[in-house]
Every structure is written in C-alpha cells, then in structure tokens.
Length: 248
Image (tube, rainbow, N blue to C red):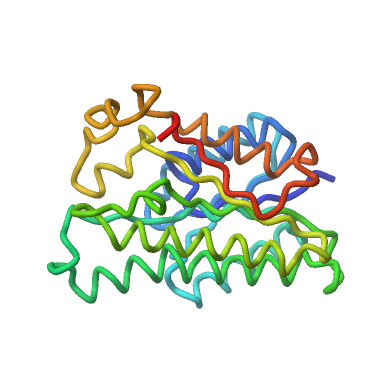
C-alpha cells in the first residue's frame, strides 16, 4: 500500500510539479484545488498514468469548514494520510502598507497562515503516533520574502511567510517525538503563474538580475526539494527551512 500525500493548491505551479514528482516517487496523491477544477482533473489523469491513485478535492483553505470537509473526504477515500504539503497561498497587487485594505490583509492571513495551521492540525490528528497514526511528514511553503520583507511590494505576504517559518520551527519541536517531521521550503523567484495573480506576469523574467545565479527557478526545482524532505532520505531532518532561491 502506497503512502498518501495531500498537496494543497496543487492544480498548478509548484503544487502540480510536486504532485508529479511525488507520484514518480511512489506516493498516492490528494490534489486540492480552489477554483480550477479542469486543471486539477487533468493533473489527476497525469498522476494516474504514473501509477498513482488520486483524489481531487475542491476546498478553500481559508475556510475552516471546507478544510474539515476535505479531510473527511480523504478519510473516506484513502482511510489514511502520511504526508502534507501546505502549498496553497496567495499574493496580491503591489502596494505600500499604508494603502492595504482590511479585506486584503484578512484574505492574506486566512489563506497563508490560518489555512496552513488548520491543515497541519487535521493532518496531525491522523498521523501522530500518540493518536494511533503511523507518523508522517509536513512540508510548509515559505518564501525568501520572509527574509527580505517585501517593502513597497507586499509586506503583508512577506509577513505571512515569516509566520510560516516560525510555525515550522515550533511545530517541528512539538511533534518531534510523535513520528512527524516538519520542514519548510523557502523559494526565491520562481517562474510560475502566481506572479500574474499579483499583477506582475513578467516578474520572474524581469527580476532574474536580482538573483546571484542570474535566473529564475522552476517549479520542478522547488518540487525536488519538497520530495526529498518528504522522503526517508531526510529521516533526521526536522525544523529545517531550506532556501531554494538561487542564492538570493
């Protein structure tokens, strides 16, 4: 029986790349998506062609009731959970803090922070050896913005990812004797569609000069780091925040 991995926000970008690499590494995959059902279903077909069993689940991780429904569907379909990648996240339009609305801040923190914490909470209930589980691995998606601050662009996004770094450290220590490893990956400038949702579709290309390696990274490069942290090869690694940033 293959281990089961939930990837939130998996229909595109880093999430989709991680799903494909994980399927190749022997995982069955739960593909969570918020809106793009067609992309999620297409991905599931790709994963099944690689030999993985799949489940596509629509859920907004910024809404607790939808998170609970998603985990109930996983219980019914697979009956187990062995890994979680907290990949779902949002950015917003470039803005100074003085001009940020409450609605923007609420959306940013609900999805990027509360969603990550709540999904982790539900995964712990199923994976912790203290609760009858078999252990597992949680990978959180941070961002180099957590170190750089995002000034005059998206300080709120950077702050949300700084919270993810702190959460990763604390949760890893809390779960260290419960068979669950908790780590984070901190991508730099990665060429994915998320930049378009923040109003900067060419950001990856335009910002390449800011990276010591002088290029943007790929979703697959981030996915490979995630898959390694999920694997038994990283069995003594917990509480790590791994930069995948080209040196930035």
